[in-house]
Image (tube, rainbow, N blue to C red; front, side, top):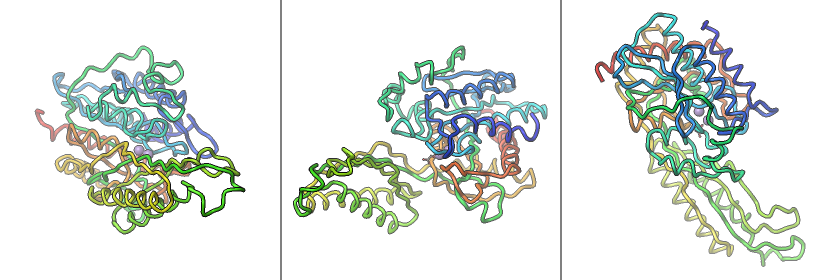
Length: 410
Ligand code: GLV
Ligand code: MN
Ligand code: MN
């Protein structure tokens, strides 16, 4: 591997699932599988032992001196949102592979095995929930429940992972269950803080808690020309009020964000009064009680709409993840690694969710951020400068060495 390998690898990945608005690589689609195939090729070329598990997570293992030691896992995800960029997730996976190769090139022997990991389905784009692979791996969710999830196109994850088009890779052995010694994740910041501060690296303090909901409002459908306004039970008008109430409660809560990113109006005719509106809600905050405040505001707004507009509303919480603080000792190890490179880093919270949220529940975990140009992410225009990408890989390799030492005999 040369210093530019990370840039070249991200360019290779960026071709997979590319469309006019960005990159679309949803879990267990042919595109996402091609990205996993590429990861498998890198692993084989690098001489790393490749394994996969039933959730679709892929692991490339670099041996350590101690054969009995639990591995340090280093990963992120290869799936994207429907109009994703080239770096969110892909950087942490390709970066992990590059970091392992860097350790090889420098002839470094670690005590622990180190595994580059591509976690399955972090975004929750095709299947309704995020961090599917890492939730199953860590036992936060039962594998059977994860595999029973249905995609927006009606396909069950179990079937999608069994299909030739988007399924598990053939000829890759199953990974044995084993303890995780520690977890590291490299990621683009996806916000503007590092760039604005002119700082090349960030060490994540904690990942914001997040909850995802599905909200449904049912009214009475009818003819757009004949039903007088005062006789309508229009669920879309009610939804508009609920959406605005959610927006203002998140603003008032402070340090809290709420997003309605999916919105369906049924039956969807220009000249038909809607019968039903279904929309998603994503609420996040480093403070879990603020998320609860927005949830309560949404419930109150739904009750008001029901009373005033003669509609029926319901709200289902699909996914709830508490804030995830990163491990103090791991953060200190990452800072030592960066200082050892004569680079600067600041502590930074993460508003975005990451697989590290799940791994932090079973092992000491830390994350490294590099700047995102213009702070943009989840858009095709997501960018990070080549020099920042390369520096991040160097920091990750140095952090793996520090963590290996800090773990001692564990
Ligand atoms: C993943 O990118 C998320 O934060 O939703
Ligand atoms: Mn990500
Ligand atoms: Mn993302």
